[in-house]
Length: 419
Image 1 (cartoon, helix red, strand yellow):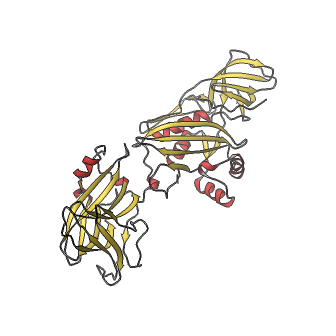
Image 2: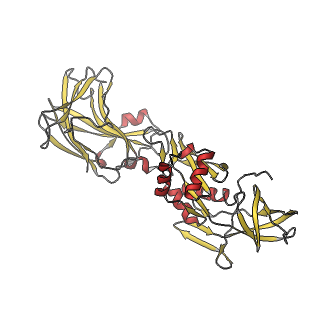
Image 3: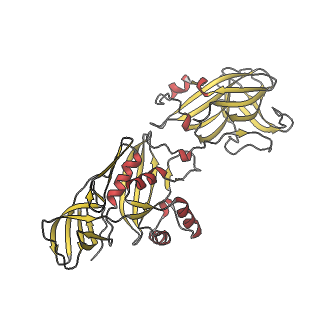
């Protein structure tokens, strides 16, 4: 008979402990219904084929995105074509799945039409691949390990989940495709090497005000996708911290180069001109080198910006620290841009400092940065909340509205770090 692999949305709250019992576990506003059996009703019997209508119930009740997705994964993969199970005391093989109707193959069955039955649910082994991340500005991050979903799958009790390091080792050793690039052959090979029944893979695509989540569940024995799940998740619910750099910044120029995340070419606007180089004979705080920037601001709207563009989580830090000096008295803007979680717009937070001809250490607490009203008026859809755990970029700017001398100004920066 031709295999048909249509997902099934079923489950009940029954746990097998020698006999059928209910099991409900509450975890921080999350309820997990454990089970080893699923109830059903025999619809028809044709020779060795028994068609059963099974119930449809949730396993996990929670408003967290990972639990919502996990619940759908469990429902969609509770039965697999060819899997051996038991209906009562009779052994059975799953032959066909059509929504909540499942066809079993049972030799010499003693079941009868309209009989209520309990079907044993074997525990399956699942491998969770890295998910693709689409629509992020930082192209360095194109995939992410979905630890939250993996944890929810383990908590459900319905799977043995392949350990992450083992999966990575297998993929590397056998040069198998990961993330969304799995094909029928690689799926079968992965399943063979790690003894898995299922592979879960997918992608998160960032839209204007939500994530579009696409999951695929692959039966490794056949390489067939047994279910494709699509879900919209609010931007605020999925914050991919694995994509954010939470390490401290320690920008010193002693190696005579500028880190790749700093803009190699300063952004100039409205006629401003600038260039940057390593000053090998002028360092601060005991160093020998620093960054020297030559600015020229011909008019009031002129602006030059030296910035660091990298997604960062700065929630564990209190502020930014650096050394600076100038060829003459200058007002410098220190600015941070945070990405909003609920829309695609960005807020700008900044403060002004006065820089003189002598090296000076500056320590600017994050809580002293002020929302830039001119920027906020230009992009009114920004949420006005300083999200330190989602910093898009930060930098130093010299503006013509404050410095309009129509002459060159030199700025030196050194030992830039967070504290």
